[in-house]
Length: 264
Length: 329
Ligand SMILES: Nc1ncnc2c1ncn2[C@@H]1O[C@H](COP(=O)(O)OP(=O)(O)OP(=O)(O)O)[C@@H](O)[C@H]1O
Ligand SMILES: [Mg+2]
Image (cartoon, rainbow over all chains, first blue to last red):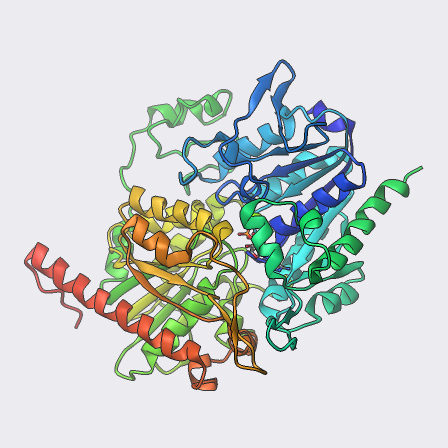
């Protein structure tokens, strides 16, 4: 497990609810930190539904082994952005990973222990929804490394906020600090009449942060350019100047860059 | 997996497994000697108990998706509401999303508790002919997190299937969490005696979602679970102001219809993203009744019809194959 001791900041992206944009936010934060000159790793521990390879257009790439362990797949030539996902280990992209808990736990231990990240400024960990095997295993393994904490992603509607409340309890019980809450998919601007509709209502994430005394990291609007970028595996931050979600994401990334400055 | 002793090592194969006492994890386990020598009991007796318990349930349907947040619970709840508009039918909904139970809120039953009766748990009735069960009803507060590993979740699902008193049902709809893991395997295993009519698979149009859903379809094929068909949710957005449609989640690879065609599965229909649906879910109301003018309602009723006719066909086919009339009286 000593590969993680040369990682400066570890951030876990969590949500009790599925499909709220955990992977999307993990990817944007990673890209933003990378653009700011940081060396970043992104570990995908969603074993049944890995989205990260697709979102970086890295599907079909293989993992290589070196004497120190597994080498991540690098997105850039300078090797400042490395990615690890079970997607790289599957023969066929459509294969279902039908694993019960113990097998998933063993895989996650390997991901946390055997990947040779080298010196990272940040390791971002993307998770599946819930509070079960994957999450318990990650938390147990990370405790020794003093992670910065968890970022909770929610959409504004009550159904999602309800699940994220449970995720806060999970963080408290497992002793992991909460970096803050992101409200994703906050509003949608109609391309025909410019009316902004709060499809999934509004403000639920902010209210939850206030009630629980944890930082609110910002609201990200619904932006079809973001969906498109991720489907194509493009870098959204570079290819969509002026799009509604960009400013919000850039603001969000600043909070994460600041984590590195706050240290002595 | 429910046969894992308290003091077992992490990767215990279970005392009933072929590998009991022989797996690498068994090295050094205090139970190793006992496990490797005891005769195996064969299939879990719960499978037969569940078959008997559910013998008066005509149709069993699973709602699945590889991807989170695509609308499985919304679809399950409204399928239930739609089926329950026929007052002669009895409907049950079982929520096996153990870590993120949203069904109680969507069905407007938050804060209800279940009662233990002589023969098991009585479900919560949200209408005269619509009963439901969820772990949400067993939690003390909405903040309670269920921090359970898979084996414990499977045990809970077994209990739900075996111990809930549905009595007679025309339809039992099972809402699942995303993925292809413990919960899904538990359902397949424990319902193997009772039988499942099939699975409705839900997705949204974009490739990030379809990628995961193809895995789910492969899971169904691997486990011989029939697929009723695929529903595409959130296909387009109708602006409440100008009533024009726009696409939020673009179908970059042709959406669910194309995927269904490619894989030879049935496409059941698409549902638009209507903000009023999200609001109904938050408030625990049925959008079929609250916003009957929404284009989503027409599209939805069409899907319900296809599911119903599949189920009728399924029973006919099974009866023909077994040469026995299914007796539910
Ligand atoms: N702000 C946004 N605007 C538009 N589309 C978005 C936004 N956030 C996320 N999406 C899209 O929504 C879908 C779901 O997002 P994502 O895959 O990141 O969710 P997730 O929480 O990781 O889901 P899962 O629980 O399945 O892992 C993706 O197609 C993504 O591109
Ligand atoms: Mg994800």
